[in-house]
Amino acid sequence: MADQELHETLLHTLHAEAGAKFGPFAGYSMPLFYDGQGAIAEHLHTRSSASLFDVSHMRAVDLVGSDPAAALETLVPGGITTLAEGKLRYTFFTSDTGGILDDLIAWAMGDRVSVVVNASRVDHDLAHLRTLSDVEVIERADLHLVALQGPKSEGVLSDLGIDVSALGFMSGMVADVDGTPVRVTRSGYTGEDGFELAIPADLVVTISTQILSDDRVELAGLAARDSLRLEAGLCLYGSDIDDTTSPVEAGLMWAIPKRRREAGDYPGAGVVSAQLDDGVTRHRVGIGTAQRRPIRPGNEVFTLDGERVGVVTSGGFGASVDGPVAMGYVADSSATVGTQLEADVRGKRVPCHVADLPFVIPNYKR
Image (cartoon, rainbow, N blue to C red; front, side):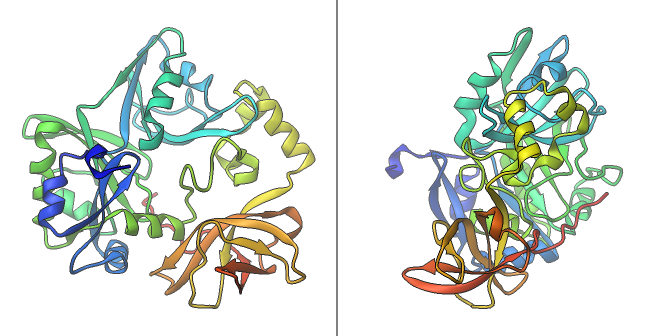
């Protein structure tokens, strides 16, 4: 996509002034990393302190109606009607064939359910949600999302006058910031404690600048966000999950409660149930290596006897573990942790093995 066709977030000038190196992502010009820091430094700073990520290319959508939670449950296998007010839940849209159409976060907000969907799937997801009966689907393009991630994030927000001490992981509140409501959730996609803020357009630059004025906070780009979520074993839609992968293959059955499994009242439930009974031919696994050479997406994976058994879907350098980390899909016969394999990296076979996920234990506040 040509540069002139890319959208810019409201924080684009702030990123440019900070020396951002931009790249295209989901139709937006997004900061990949910043001059003088780089992705590795940004990654490590997030793990030790706090980093601010621009995620306003993602979209908040409100569902309003007589029972929006029950309506949403007809499209997803997650437990939405049992979600207590103020709590969040990870779930995904499934197709009639059991594939994953997108993953999302649902938040029970009393008179509505708010969901955040991926930037690359906004149009699809809005159309999908609008198939629901008796639900008004409100696209909140007026709210811009930023993520403050890292162990010092709570202190940063507290010093700004936003008391989040009572929030546990996957819960949210609406804070009053100078008379303006700002949605704050204790969530994120880095494996660290942290928060996502949905800020009205006229305040997003001001509040982001205030956050960055704290010496504990630095900007971080999409490259660090990707390596952080990979270390935490978190899927990226379009890479690790899509409409050709099922929750069983992807190792996401933890997100489908017993009630929904037994009821089988979501799209693709029959396929998922059959896979649970009969097994699947492939599994998403972690892939580690003692080599320093990173294993990249698209690299094929082989047994030591030369049989192709899978492919890498995400891979790169894990700064926290000081070595390459990857994930991908391998055949059921090769999916046991510790299985020795080889990855084809530009024509060279690199020794690797099936590794436990996550590579880094998440640091969420329970």
